[in-house]
Image (cartoon, rainbow, N blue to C red):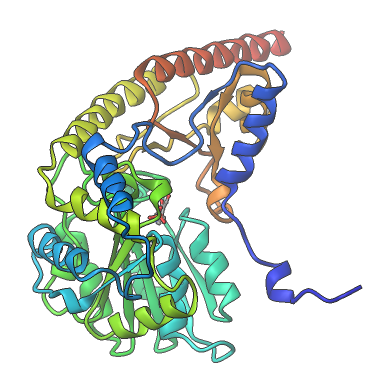
Length: 407
Ligand SMILES: Cc1ncc(COP(=O)(O)O)c(C=O)c1O
């Protein structure tokens, strides 16, 4: 048989897409499933942005663009980053790519060498691509647990115990997928105190949910004194403007910009031209549509968390950002016959008609941290209400079965 590389065989994946396939198959087979497993806004891209895309198409803006992106968009992103992150950046510091995701691989490749023992620290639970790209690029993954007792926020002391002169990259993600936790300015200052002791340490600040913060003002690590130079601010149009399928994201860092642009040249050549022109409209036009989506997510967050906390055996902390609930379901798992979170997720899909993800889709289990599910509230209020009722019915039945079994 013709060989396939070990690194390709061991490449990780994003299980949201695997579960989505499972859900689609069940729906195609005639089952009624309410799905809360995918992390994308349930809104279509606002009209004015789609029209800008159409205009670009009609005007024939169909060629390659510079690898770093069209100058107008880089300029607009720099202005937006100056305003929202309160840091001094220019268009030269901005590189546009096909979403935020490719920058995870570009940056790991830009700051680590394969086989050199360079370490990458990232949060667990966390976005699964951090680990798969770290391994694929031949760097050493170091898992930083986010614990329930710290509100699923990074504990600077635990970070301090893991960082060393071998660490080349720390990946931060606030607001956080999957827990919805948000780092406060004070916590970022404590993180900065650890980081500043290591001159070779870069920070990848994964910020695609930066506009989706509900209870506090957003702070980026880049704005903490001394952190701008070594922080790569990464954001995208996917969540803020409901544009995940357009594939536009960006990374901002003065020193790494030319390196990242070269990686874009070596992979996609450039982000799609039409999508870049549409994103220019998204970033520069009045932000009313994004504000309206933010309000909808905020309302749904309150409804969903309230609903989850009324279900016996479920406890859910209030997520400060993003559009994910991360309920602790350890007790529900026990009542349902000693399941783990993944077995519970499967039963919820097949018996209750509710599709969610489980914690094992976001990294290995952390001993002592219990069982969790991820429920996206980027879904209509009606669907969320029905989903919560189904979960409550399932939990009620599990409770009755447990009582019956004890008799
Ligand atoms: C934490 C995190 N980072 C990066 C991404 C990638 O987003 P995109 O490539 O669509 O900009 C996602 C998408 O779900 C995410 O949750």
